[in-house]
Image 1: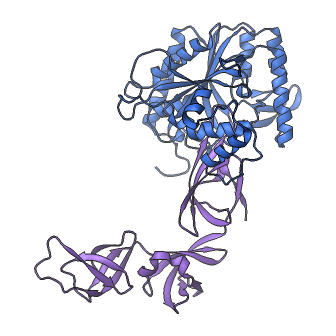
Image 2: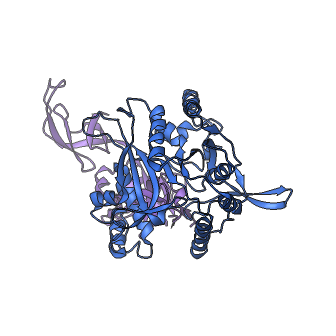
Image 3: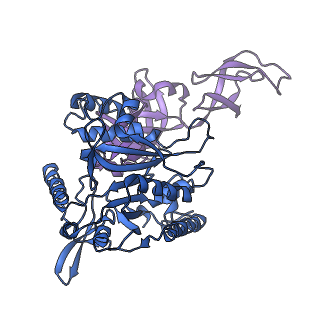
Length: 340
Length: 188
């Protein structure tokens, strides 16, 4: 095809995409989960130091104000939950500045849903069921049920022979630089988390979600990672694992080396929530990043009371890309960001 | 030169790494579900031709490299340096060191256009055309009637390259050769 105006996906793919999205809606309709739409613009943005938010200036009744484009629909959905919505889901256009690649686009569709009263394992099983609904039997054969679960610590043991909770920072930096083909000392100023993230992304993730020995080429399986270090909790609760270390009550699901979904046992404590926002912004100041306006209305909603339960965010474009076996994310988007 | 951030790295972009000019071969963003994103980058070192792999934290940047590719005709050598001339009508000449030619010295022929890579206006790499026509200067006598099948023999070409040719080829014949594989293609 030619011309800069041309769509990045072909028409057959767009029809397949529509069919898959209809199946997502049917999945939630059967389970009595309500579809909602929440604002793309918000007064508060994500403070996470690893997410770059876009913002826009708007003239509103309140005057000229800076509004943030959501990096996920989490804050508004939690405000609905606190107001008594019950289980909800959303197909949410979200934005992350600078994320460009074979599996990333600045603007993307997040499928996010919340299940009041669900434990983390129960939500993990439901997430697996949704993924099975979209991936064909040829890609993902086998029975329903929970995905194969790996603790973060065990994966580091198995692939790198270190304990990520106790290894010395010096050794961790050396190992990460070596595995990242970086010059010696390249990570000497980096914190523990950066080194762990590098090893997780480059060494461990590519091995997750592949078929066991007796399956055919091209097939995969669903793998879950649980019990992340507490510092990687984001908006999840924390608990103490069997080794006595504090870990995040979180899971991530992988298929064929690709991270698809990120689930939380949701933090419901407003004081803790405010403290995490403040800690993020303090880190942003230290690193010279822009500070992000905190969503004080989310904190107020938690003070009112968020029902206990679990929530998950799934990269829908990425799942469609895998389901349709396309090499690039832009192949399943009508127009990718460079072509918009 | 401008600086380029990891999200601008794409195939063919020329950047400086560890003091050498490099061409980006591929760039992949990798990111755990939560946490620091990285770019896994493959670069070809234009001085050595070797491909390097290197991981960068997303958002890091590299200085651009002042690299150009120009078409030039080979003129002659004085034994020390090899001389090329731009084909754009400027008649500007460049002296090229042996290091930039590497193994491709054996494909040099006067008046043939080559791609010369310049870094800060110095030639660092010479790439021959994919196919070149060269005369056979030395080979065993051809075998009559053996035009159809089987067998090959070495032949030395006017540029000094030695290639395997079919048995029926004789000295003085001009052959078409693939410079990428060093293989005989046909009689020219």
